Image (tube, rainbow, N blue to C red; front, side):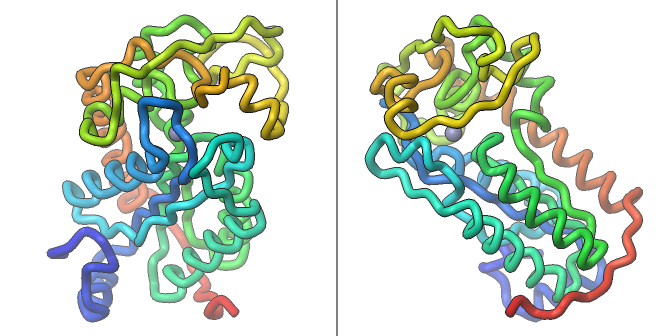
Length: 269
Ligand SMILES: [Zn+2]
């Protein structure tokens, strides 16, 4: 394919692609506040760049990105746009069903809105798996790039959360012109271990939900959860490369080892 983005091709290009390859990447993000040092589009920019880079190196098509996600807690700060979870599930389901209708059989969702987009996306994935038999996987940095994240982090437990060092380093590497490294901060709260939000911290925990006022308070009126102070572009580069390596292997695995028996769905109506 000349163009890695589906929307930059002609329909005949897609028809030709599907004769030899059935895999496609679909980036999902969020438009939400990312403290004083990162832009609102951070989650979408990162998902799109990871998908684009690996799409290029493996000749895999990338579907148009879904920019907005489920981010009600971030409405505490201006500029955030949130979909209702039902809307995100519907957007994901209709987008993927359209792709499966045309013959894509293995779909990798690259989710930049780590963790928070997962409930609506998992519902869409489960419905389509049962409806069509297609292989669908969600690539979420908290889970998929976890080994690199644990290795590269410098902050204390509680340091990984939102707009913190891993996300900031990744952005400083890829989009330095949109970032303000001088405005990083630290916000590691002293809380009961059960309420720990850092995905790489040890220990048992519960899941809780934030309301808008509570999230504003928990993020110190800045929008940061965790520690952004140790962020740097060199770490971001290592994190990005590990992500691409993982995703390259996942695409290889999908294409060579995953067997599917896909039933063509109706068009979404
Ligand atoms: Zn983010």
